[in-house]
Amino acid sequence: MKNYQTVVPIAQAAAPAVQRQATGLHLIGDLYGCICDSRLMLDAAYLENFCKERVAAAGLTTVGSLFHSFGEGGGVTGVVVLAESHLSIHTWPESGYVTLDVYVCNYSENNRPKAQKLFDDLLAAFNPNDPHLHRVDRA
Image 1 (tube, rainbow, N blue to C red):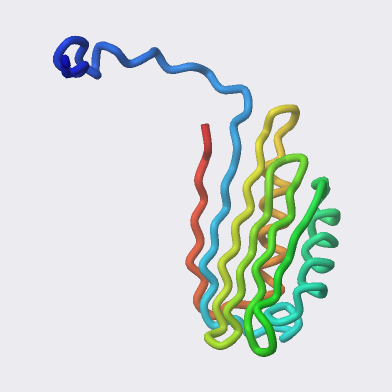
Image 2: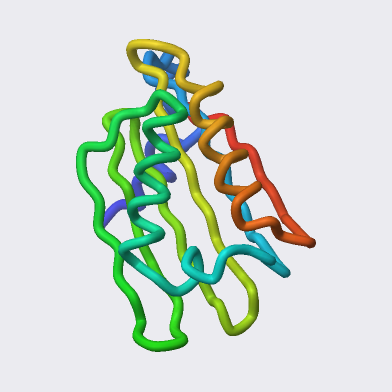
């Protein structure tokens, strides 16, 4: 069996860069030391409604959601599926830690300002004293 890399080197086989139509923005937060309404950390139904309200306030479109509580004193994990992409969130109330992920595509319009508003609103609600934030331009 031939080693394909020796027949056609990877550098020569690479396709030319393709201009992407659906560029996106991915905002990621590791939120340490959150000081917030405890319902945001513990109550799946409350957090789901809060997130969906913030999505609408940012001008984005919810197409579905699923939130799960890990029981009394446990955290919540949830996702809001957006027409523009998604919001995911995970809470660890025992350590005041939250992971936050907002991703939007920009296929038919520039959704970056909307994603930033959603992210900023959620960041303010969780009020972390040590936020670690990342911004990734996609495609």
